[in-house]
Image (cartoon, rainbow, N blue to C red; front, side, top):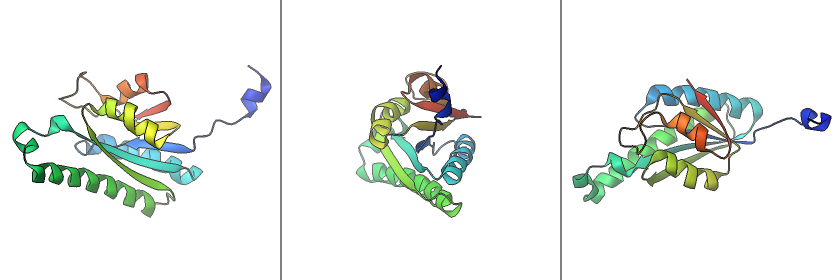
Length: 153
């Protein structure tokens, strides 16, 4: 390794936090970590959540008002995290709400390319029973993401 490479600091400028509206414990821990980075290093913080199509049963999927209600709930959860981040000193915070199938696929194929972060912060305990692959989303994202990932326990 060259001396120049060691002396150049590795700095994250855009941090993406994923939150699960159904998993407060995991999301809150990841939020505290991402907020600390955003506030202390004055970086842009994107707060993202995905409304999964699998979370909506077949009957609700035929009722536009039910889908709108679910969408509004996910947007409200993200807005609450954004407001909390701003109240606690984060200066650049962006809400990101997406819809789709599998959470990790949506994050990898849509959220990351759209927001263009250089660090992903996610919780470790989050499980989605409808996901194609059993287990926590955080570790799966850590294996698949094209950027650095911090999985907060």
